[in-house]
Length: 513
Ligand code: GLU
Image 1 (cartoon, rainbow, N blue to C red):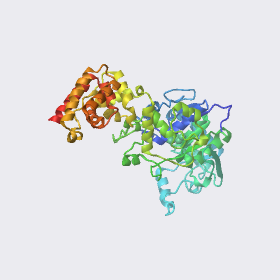
Image 2 (cartoon, rainbow, N blue to C red; image 1 turned 30 degrees about the horizontal axis):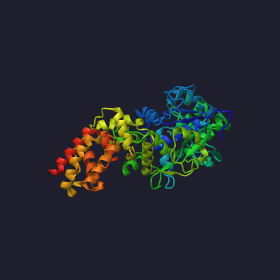
Image 3 (cartoon, rainbow, N blue to C red; image 1 turned 120 degrees about the horizontal axis):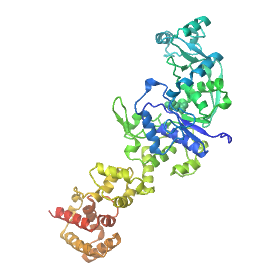
Image 4 (cartoon, helix red, strand yellow; image 1 turned 45 degrees about the horizontal axis):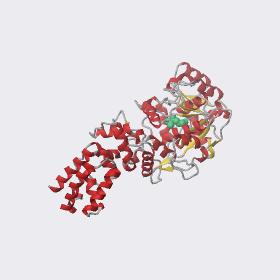
């Protein structure tokens, strides 16, 4: 599937119309991995020819997102490159000649129909079976275009600058076949597709023309995109055939859909809102409604976990392995192992990946984000070294980054909300005495290490003839505030002598009171 003499060049070609759905990021990821696996180049092209769909901030969002994921393009409007400009709106002038060439060759035609005429056509031909009739090989015969009007009339309209578009002339009876890298041979009958507009009245190409021309000019060898683009493939293949020859055409791969958790249809942003999980990569605020859709990043996912989770939605390496670094994925990724069927999204599994990555990475990796989260909760963290130690101690207990607020916060802020209800019912004078003596013993301990503290504690329980188990929970609640956290003597070690004793005293007063 890869020609050794031709450098692999792939492209991600988003239309900047909003936040990136996780399916979009997975398309980026598969592009990136394939390119890097073959020592090729990954191009990012902004497909912004439909100016009515322009959304402020959407392009920046795409770059921020790729940045966060660590999937840096080799060429893009931001990174430059030899095939620029990489924004289609800035390439406007390069498309007309291809559209005109198609007209000259008889593969496309001028259409002068006004919006009112198009509307009239739809109303006239609509039936119960076909509620929105299409401008196709049958109806084009009824419309005002260069196929139906005389040559002179067409020349006159053009010389008068009459508004017109250029449409592809779909063959009436042709089977269009291509080999998709994932689904094998795919065939379409030409009559099923309408005569798509290629060049609009304002001189802008539509997506169909621009995608083919740019894939050609940018020397793209493999084009991966979501399955929703499969119905457009016959138009693109014909354009390739008419303009550049099929031997120049990139190999196509239409990636399977990401499905709702119940497997019933494509996962949408609304499913996320309804079921309480993110679907976008990062927070996206719609500039019109100012409504924010939450993203994986803000929910507390690590980019490593996010892309690891994404790659497993539709790919595996043929083993039971599930945890992969980006570099490992670059080494292992092949299209042969991409599944044909849709992949079900499972939020619990996504969280599992994050938990694995939080455990696996050194805490220094996500320490700055955790610091921000703690500070946002009013917990100030004076010392990086101390924070690192704490994060290492509690990371096994965290699934999403905000979990660190509960799991690490009490190290830096004396808990005020102490769960005394959990110890009061079994509290007695013996325990009171024990903790009084334990404070003295701790004060005299030769070193402030968890092993030493545990030994001191256990010796004292033996002297007092109380089971250590009965005293551990009260001690934990004294230091942590609740029934959670890592080993209690580790907690004491990190807190230090003064703070440990202060917290014990404080709770003793509460339970006695
Ligand atoms: N501009 C299309 C999109 O927004 C790209 C489709 C393709 O990759 O051909 O998804």
